[in-house]
Length: 333
Image (cartoon, rainbow, N blue to C red; front, top):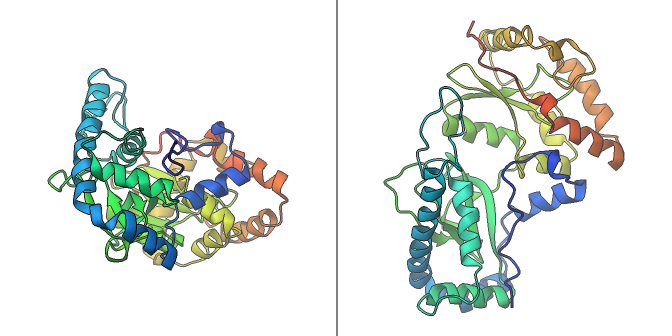
Protein backbone atom coordinates (compact mmCIF):
# COMPACT_ATOMS: atom_id res chain seq x y z
CA UNK A 1 0.00 0.00 0.00
CA UNK A 2 1.48 3.37 -1.00
CA UNK A 3 1.71 5.92 1.84
CA UNK A 4 -0.80 8.71 1.43
CA UNK A 5 1.00 11.74 2.83
CA UNK A 6 4.54 11.62 1.54
CA UNK A 7 4.53 13.01 -1.96
CA UNK A 8 4.37 16.58 -3.19
CA UNK A 9 4.64 17.92 -6.72
CA UNK A 10 8.39 18.04 -7.50
CA UNK A 11 8.48 21.62 -8.80
CA UNK A 12 11.81 23.42 -9.00
CA UNK A 13 10.29 26.90 -8.87
CA UNK A 14 7.01 28.69 -8.49
CA UNK A 15 5.46 30.38 -11.49
CA UNK A 16 2.26 30.17 -13.44
CA UNK A 17 4.18 28.25 -16.10
CA UNK A 18 3.28 25.27 -13.93
CA UNK A 19 -0.38 25.83 -14.88
CA UNK A 20 -1.77 26.38 -11.41
CA UNK A 21 -5.44 27.13 -10.79
CA UNK A 22 -6.61 29.15 -7.79
CA UNK A 23 -7.64 25.90 -6.11
CA UNK A 24 -4.19 24.44 -6.69
CA UNK A 25 -2.56 27.53 -5.19
CA UNK A 26 -4.80 27.37 -2.13
CA UNK A 27 -4.18 23.63 -1.75
CA UNK A 28 -0.43 24.28 -1.99
CA UNK A 29 -0.61 26.80 0.84
CA UNK A 30 -2.71 24.57 3.06
CA UNK A 31 -0.41 21.61 2.42
CA UNK A 32 2.47 23.58 3.97
CA UNK A 33 0.49 24.60 7.07
CA UNK A 34 1.21 22.83 10.35
CA UNK A 35 -1.71 20.65 11.37
CA UNK A 36 -2.87 21.71 14.84
CA UNK A 37 -2.50 19.44 17.80
CA UNK A 38 -5.59 17.45 18.73
CA UNK A 39 -6.44 14.58 20.99
CA UNK A 40 -6.75 12.20 18.05
CA UNK A 41 -3.44 13.30 16.49
CA UNK A 42 -1.65 13.08 19.82
CA UNK A 43 -3.00 9.59 20.50
CA UNK A 44 -2.00 8.37 17.04
CA UNK A 45 1.48 9.86 17.44
CA UNK A 46 1.94 8.44 20.94
CA UNK A 47 1.00 4.98 19.70
CA UNK A 48 3.11 4.89 16.55
CA UNK A 49 5.91 7.49 16.70
CA UNK A 50 6.87 8.39 20.26
CA UNK A 51 8.16 4.89 21.20
CA UNK A 52 10.43 4.89 18.13
CA UNK A 53 12.02 8.36 18.18
CA UNK A 54 15.60 7.13 18.56
CA UNK A 55 15.13 4.61 15.74
CA UNK A 56 13.56 7.24 13.48
CA UNK A 57 16.42 9.71 14.03
CA UNK A 58 18.95 6.93 13.38
CA UNK A 59 17.24 6.01 10.11
CA UNK A 60 16.98 9.65 9.03
CA UNK A 61 20.75 10.03 9.44
CA UNK A 62 21.24 6.99 7.21
CA UNK A 63 18.87 8.29 4.54
CA UNK A 64 20.51 11.70 4.71
CA UNK A 65 23.84 10.08 3.80
CA UNK A 66 22.14 8.69 0.70
CA UNK A 67 20.69 12.10 -0.09
CA UNK A 68 24.11 13.72 0.29
CA UNK A 69 25.63 11.25 -2.17
CA UNK A 70 22.87 12.04 -4.67
CA UNK A 71 23.31 15.81 -4.49
CA UNK A 72 27.09 15.66 -4.53
CA UNK A 73 26.96 13.49 -7.67
CA UNK A 74 24.52 15.90 -9.32
CA UNK A 75 26.73 18.86 -8.48
CA UNK A 76 29.83 17.04 -9.78
CA UNK A 77 28.22 16.42 -13.18
CA UNK A 78 27.03 20.02 -13.45
CA UNK A 79 23.32 19.30 -13.07
CA UNK A 80 23.05 21.70 -10.12
CA UNK A 81 24.51 25.18 -10.38
CA UNK A 82 24.89 27.99 -7.86
CA UNK A 83 21.81 30.18 -7.47
CA UNK A 84 23.74 33.10 -8.94
CA UNK A 85 25.15 31.07 -11.84
CA UNK A 86 26.65 33.30 -14.49
CA UNK A 87 29.90 35.05 -15.26
CA UNK A 88 30.58 35.63 -11.56
CA UNK A 89 28.97 32.43 -10.24
CA UNK A 90 30.30 31.04 -7.00
CA UNK A 91 30.91 27.32 -6.45
CA UNK A 92 27.98 25.39 -5.03
CA UNK A 93 28.43 25.28 -1.27
CA UNK A 94 26.43 22.15 -0.47
CA UNK A 95 24.53 21.72 1.82
CA UNK A 96 24.19 25.48 2.51
CA UNK A 97 20.85 26.80 1.17
CA UNK A 98 19.69 23.32 0.07
CA UNK A 99 16.99 23.09 2.75
CA UNK A 100 14.05 22.72 0.37
CA UNK A 101 15.81 20.38 -2.04
CA UNK A 102 17.09 18.09 0.70
CA UNK A 103 13.72 17.99 2.43
CA UNK A 104 11.90 17.06 -0.77
CA UNK A 105 14.45 14.41 -1.68
CA UNK A 106 14.35 12.94 1.81
CA UNK A 107 10.56 12.68 1.65
CA UNK A 108 10.98 10.71 -1.56
CA UNK A 109 13.50 8.36 0.07
CA UNK A 110 11.31 7.99 3.15
CA UNK A 111 8.31 6.97 1.05
CA UNK A 112 9.92 3.94 -0.59
CA UNK A 113 8.17 0.67 0.10
CA UNK A 114 8.93 -1.62 1.71
CA UNK A 115 11.14 -0.03 4.34
CA UNK A 116 14.50 -1.86 4.65
CA UNK A 117 14.31 -4.52 7.35
CA UNK A 118 16.91 -2.82 9.55
CA UNK A 119 15.11 0.56 9.40
CA UNK A 120 12.65 -0.05 12.19
CA UNK A 121 12.15 3.67 12.71
CA UNK A 122 11.17 4.20 9.08
CA UNK A 123 8.84 1.21 9.28
CA UNK A 124 7.15 2.84 12.30
CA UNK A 125 6.61 5.96 10.20
CA UNK A 126 5.08 3.88 7.40
CA UNK A 127 2.74 2.24 9.91
CA UNK A 128 1.83 5.70 11.21
CA UNK A 129 0.95 6.92 7.71
CA UNK A 130 -1.15 3.83 7.02
CA UNK A 131 -3.06 4.54 10.22
CA UNK A 132 -3.89 8.01 8.89
CA UNK A 133 -1.05 9.98 10.46
CA UNK A 134 0.47 12.98 8.65
CA UNK A 135 4.08 12.99 7.46
CA UNK A 136 4.37 16.10 5.31
CA UNK A 137 6.53 19.11 4.50
CA UNK A 138 5.71 22.33 6.32
CA UNK A 139 7.18 25.82 5.96
CA UNK A 140 7.48 28.64 8.43
CA UNK A 141 9.71 30.52 10.85
CA UNK A 142 12.10 28.71 13.17
CA UNK A 143 13.05 30.44 16.43
CA UNK A 144 12.23 33.82 14.94
CA UNK A 145 15.37 33.95 12.81
CA UNK A 146 15.10 31.46 9.96
CA UNK A 147 12.77 30.54 7.15
CA UNK A 148 12.54 26.79 7.47
CA UNK A 149 11.36 23.78 5.51
CA UNK A 150 10.67 20.92 7.89
CA UNK A 151 8.59 17.76 8.13
CA UNK A 152 5.62 17.35 10.44
CA UNK A 153 5.38 13.82 11.81
CA UNK A 154 2.20 13.90 13.82
CA UNK A 155 2.93 16.10 16.83
CA UNK A 156 6.69 16.09 16.11
CA UNK A 157 8.93 18.48 14.18
CA UNK A 158 11.52 16.72 12.02
CA UNK A 159 14.29 18.68 10.31
CA UNK A 160 16.28 16.51 7.90
CA UNK A 161 18.27 19.51 6.60
CA UNK A 162 19.35 21.00 9.91
CA UNK A 163 22.85 21.87 8.62
CA UNK A 164 21.88 23.99 5.63
CA UNK A 165 22.60 27.31 7.38
CA UNK A 166 25.28 26.20 9.84
CA UNK A 167 27.15 23.18 8.49
CA UNK A 168 28.46 22.36 11.97
CA UNK A 169 25.00 21.51 13.27
CA UNK A 170 23.70 17.90 13.23
CA UNK A 171 22.10 17.00 9.92
CA UNK A 172 18.89 15.79 11.57
CA UNK A 173 16.85 17.17 14.45
CA UNK A 174 13.57 15.85 15.86
CA UNK A 175 11.59 17.58 18.60
CA UNK A 176 8.03 17.78 19.85
CA UNK A 177 6.33 20.42 17.70
CA UNK A 178 5.23 22.27 20.84
CA UNK A 179 8.84 22.88 21.92
CA UNK A 180 10.49 23.34 18.51
CA UNK A 181 9.60 27.07 18.34
CA UNK A 182 8.48 26.60 14.74
CA UNK A 183 5.34 28.28 13.41
CA UNK A 184 3.66 29.15 10.15
CA UNK A 185 3.98 32.79 9.10
CA UNK A 186 0.67 34.63 9.18
CA UNK A 187 1.57 38.15 7.97
CA UNK A 188 4.07 40.10 5.88
CA UNK A 189 5.16 41.88 9.05
CA UNK A 190 6.44 38.58 10.43
CA UNK A 191 7.84 37.68 7.01
CA UNK A 192 9.80 40.96 6.95
CA UNK A 193 11.11 40.56 10.52
CA UNK A 194 12.43 37.07 9.86
CA UNK A 195 13.64 37.89 6.35
CA UNK A 196 15.76 40.82 7.50
CA UNK A 197 17.56 38.57 9.97
CA UNK A 198 17.81 35.56 7.68
CA UNK A 199 18.87 37.40 4.51
CA UNK A 200 20.75 40.24 6.25
CA UNK A 201 18.72 42.66 4.15
CA UNK A 202 16.19 45.48 4.46
CA UNK A 203 12.58 44.63 3.64
CA UNK A 204 10.11 47.45 3.04
CA UNK A 205 6.51 47.76 1.85
CA UNK A 206 6.20 47.92 -1.92
CA UNK A 207 4.98 51.51 -2.32
CA UNK A 208 6.77 51.94 -5.65
CA UNK A 209 4.98 49.45 -7.90
CA UNK A 210 1.27 49.91 -7.05
CA UNK A 211 -0.05 47.63 -9.82
CA UNK A 212 1.93 44.75 -8.36
CA UNK A 213 1.75 45.50 -4.65
CA UNK A 214 -1.53 43.67 -3.85
CA UNK A 215 0.20 40.43 -4.90
CA UNK A 216 3.88 41.11 -4.15
CA UNK A 217 3.73 43.65 -1.32
CA UNK A 218 7.35 43.65 -0.14
CA UNK A 219 10.71 44.55 -1.63
CA UNK A 220 13.98 43.09 -0.36
CA UNK A 221 16.96 45.43 -0.61
CA UNK A 222 20.20 43.49 -0.33
CA UNK A 223 23.56 45.01 0.67
CA UNK A 224 24.98 44.31 -2.80
CA UNK A 225 22.45 46.73 -4.34
CA UNK A 226 20.08 44.15 -5.76
CA UNK A 227 16.33 44.22 -5.18
CA UNK A 228 13.75 41.45 -5.20
CA UNK A 229 9.97 41.56 -5.06
CA UNK A 230 8.40 39.28 -2.46
CA UNK A 231 6.88 36.93 -1.97
CA UNK A 232 6.27 34.52 -4.82
CA UNK A 233 6.64 31.39 -2.69
CA UNK A 234 4.22 28.48 -2.63
CA UNK A 235 3.17 29.46 0.89
CA UNK A 236 3.20 33.28 1.09
CA UNK A 237 1.63 34.05 -2.29
CA UNK A 238 -1.48 31.88 -1.85
CA UNK A 239 -1.71 32.78 1.86
CA UNK A 240 -2.30 36.36 0.74
CA UNK A 241 -4.95 35.20 -1.75
CA UNK A 242 -6.73 33.05 0.83
CA UNK A 243 -6.97 36.07 3.13
CA UNK A 244 -8.44 38.31 0.43
CA UNK A 245 -5.18 40.25 -0.14
CA UNK A 246 -5.58 41.78 3.34
CA UNK A 247 -2.02 40.82 4.44
CA UNK A 248 -0.62 42.76 1.47
CA UNK A 249 -2.90 45.74 2.14
CA UNK A 250 -1.94 45.95 5.80
CA UNK A 251 1.78 45.73 5.06
CA UNK A 252 1.87 48.23 2.19
CA UNK A 253 -0.13 50.81 4.15
CA UNK A 254 2.23 50.51 7.12
CA UNK A 255 4.85 53.25 7.67
CA UNK A 256 7.86 50.98 7.96
CA UNK A 257 10.65 53.51 7.43
CA UNK A 258 11.57 57.02 8.49
CA UNK A 259 11.58 59.84 5.95
CA UNK A 260 15.34 59.88 5.41
CA UNK A 261 15.62 56.11 5.03
CA UNK A 262 12.60 56.01 2.73
CA UNK A 263 14.10 58.67 0.48
CA UNK A 264 17.30 56.63 0.21
CA UNK A 265 15.44 53.53 -0.94
CA UNK A 266 13.12 55.53 -3.18
CA UNK A 267 16.19 56.81 -4.99
CA UNK A 268 17.49 53.29 -5.43
CA UNK A 269 14.21 52.20 -6.98
CA UNK A 270 14.07 55.36 -9.11
CA UNK A 271 17.57 54.63 -10.42
CA UNK A 272 16.40 51.19 -11.45
CA UNK A 273 13.14 52.45 -12.99
CA UNK A 274 15.09 54.82 -15.21
CA UNK A 275 16.78 51.79 -16.83
CA UNK A 276 13.70 49.63 -17.36
CA UNK A 277 11.10 50.87 -19.91
CA UNK A 278 8.40 48.73 -18.31
CA UNK A 279 8.42 51.06 -15.32
CA UNK A 280 7.05 53.95 -17.40
CA UNK A 281 3.92 52.10 -18.59
CA UNK A 282 0.90 52.72 -16.29
CA UNK A 283 -0.63 49.43 -17.47
CA UNK A 284 2.45 47.32 -16.77
CA UNK A 285 2.88 45.39 -13.51
CA UNK A 286 6.19 47.20 -12.92
CA UNK A 287 4.78 50.71 -13.33
CA UNK A 288 6.88 52.91 -11.05
CA UNK A 289 5.63 55.67 -8.77
CA UNK A 290 7.91 57.57 -6.37
CA UNK A 291 5.07 57.26 -3.84
CA UNK A 292 2.38 54.91 -5.10
CA UNK A 293 0.31 54.54 -1.95
CA UNK A 294 -2.77 56.28 -3.35
CA UNK A 295 -2.49 54.32 -6.60
CA UNK A 296 -2.12 51.15 -4.54
CA UNK A 297 -5.32 51.90 -2.61
CA UNK A 298 -7.24 52.19 -5.88
CA UNK A 299 -5.62 49.05 -7.29
CA UNK A 300 -6.34 47.07 -4.12
CA UNK A 301 -10.02 48.00 -4.16
CA UNK A 302 -10.18 46.97 -7.82
CA UNK A 303 -8.52 43.56 -7.65
CA UNK A 304 -10.11 42.36 -4.44
CA UNK A 305 -13.49 42.43 -6.16
CA UNK A 306 -12.38 40.41 -9.19
CA UNK A 307 -14.19 37.16 -9.89
CA UNK A 308 -12.14 33.95 -9.95
CA UNK A 309 -11.54 34.01 -13.71
CA UNK A 310 -10.27 37.59 -13.68
CA UNK A 311 -8.21 36.98 -10.57
CA UNK A 312 -6.37 34.00 -12.04
CA UNK A 313 -5.54 36.13 -15.10
CA UNK A 314 -4.00 38.69 -12.76
CA UNK A 315 -2.13 35.99 -10.89
CA UNK A 316 -0.66 34.81 -14.19
CA UNK A 317 0.68 38.30 -14.78
CA UNK A 318 1.98 38.75 -11.26
CA UNK A 319 3.95 35.49 -11.31
CA UNK A 320 5.18 35.88 -14.85
CA UNK A 321 8.47 37.21 -16.23
CA UNK A 322 7.02 40.72 -16.63
CA UNK A 323 7.35 41.22 -12.87
CA UNK A 324 11.01 40.21 -12.56
CA UNK A 325 13.63 42.90 -12.27
CA UNK A 326 16.15 43.02 -15.10
CA UNK A 327 19.69 43.74 -13.88
CA UNK A 328 18.42 44.99 -10.54
CA UNK A 329 21.85 45.88 -9.14
CA UNK A 330 20.90 49.51 -8.63
CA UNK A 331 23.53 51.94 -7.47
CA UNK A 332 23.14 53.22 -3.90
CA UNK A 333 22.30 56.90 -3.75
